[in-house]
Image 1 (cartoon, rainbow, N blue to C red):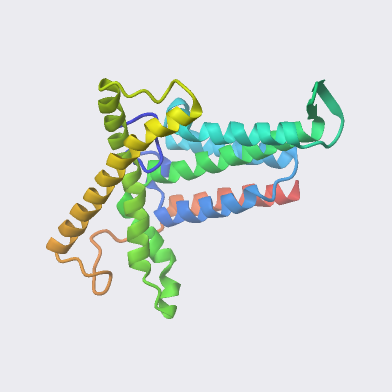
Image 2 (image 1 turned 180 degrees about the horizontal axis):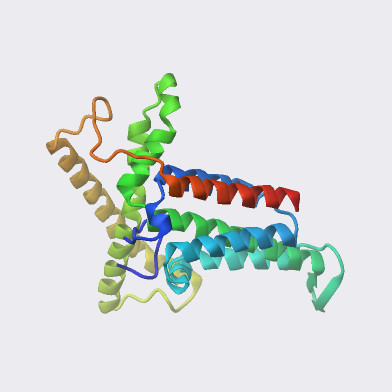
Length: 263
């Protein structure tokens, strides 16, 4: 398992988060994503950050493992921070060097946006880390059950999402193999001008897409050989059930939300 990528991976365990019903985790995470955009001061972000720290601790996953796993998105977090830092001219002037200026409003806005992005990535990553793809499919299909009235193929949608999440680490592993194979043949995309680096990456993407299409075709043939015909008439080996742990999780999260809006 690649420790530098956690998106789409499932780490088996016996923590409280692993034992929660997948629907509980999905509802809490989806609502958390919405609540993050309501935060507008240090108290709100402090409370949301404390909740994220508690959830990570309950998952019993090393924080270093999670931070390394979201390494690919650190670039976007830092890029967003510097964009607001240098291009938001609000508040008191803090520092100036020629045309480069840093204002208090730009610094605060950059920190807020970066923290918001970081919390969203970390919390959503915990869903796939503590929930198997099959549980995600079953939970999502159950939550989308009301859409069946409008003839929405919820089983197929949930299955596509689950397969997509499952294929992310597989494709990244394939990308790592291809890059090492081409590096051993003298391909260099880490030095030189930006234009030369882009030209060097193109030969890397072509075999990756070919591999992705081949894996998709193999998966389709395997599902067809096993008689897959969609969600109609299908039964489930494991039935999802809410337990006392889910009730406690909802109560704890509700207290956090109420405290958030009060403060």
